[in-house]
Image 1 (tube, rainbow over the protein chains, first blue to last red):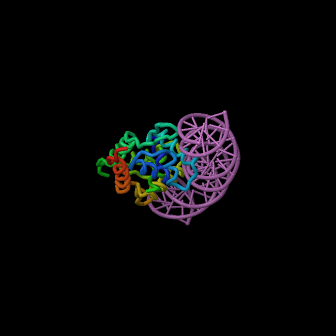
Image 2 (image 1 turned 180 degrees about the vertical axis):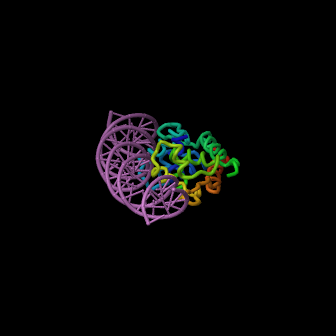
Image 3 (image 1 turned 135 degrees about the horizontal axis):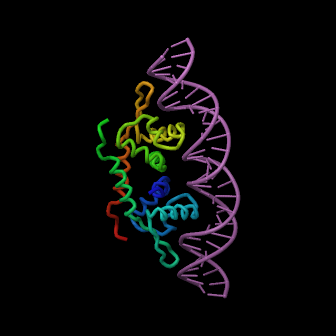
Length: 89
Length: 89
DNA sequence: TTAATATTTAGATATTTGCCTAAATATACA
DNA sequence: TGTATATTTAGGCAAATATCTAAATATTAA
């Protein structure tokens, strides 16, 4: 959970999630969408992977990344809990 | 949105939101829940306020903090959008 | 096997973050 | 008014973060 929020705290990484929401992409296809260097994008992808927000699958020389909904669910649950009606103050 | 994710990227600040989910609290009451110094908590509260995740109201010498659902809604919306069924890959 | 392409790892650097103590400000109380 | 209480602001420091270039690794193609 901690690492998920950390992974989400970056506009580039959130944009990556939005791209992957459209369809699975290779690391290179993702990198092309940004003005940031390949290695930096690779690092961002690694963080998203650590947070289990995305998963990666190697196919030949390419690595395909895809969005992973499970952790998103968990976070949404946390927010929904926050929104439950609270005691009257 | 950017600042909201930033504000959420800290366990202390998320704990503060959970405390405020129970009921409104003064800065001091919040600070007592942590082993962190008063000024540090004050700084965390300021960030949460900037992100509009909480609102503050002064009452005499106390400042009451309360949870602000509007931004939470906005973030949940972002997540729900991510979860919409995506194109088949 | 050699060269090209795709991606990650390593190392360096500038910026941001979170914490602290000390000082400042605001309000309440004696 | 003078003192105590509640909270914020300021300044400093260590750790974390985002970025870069260069180098390494893996796979494909000539």
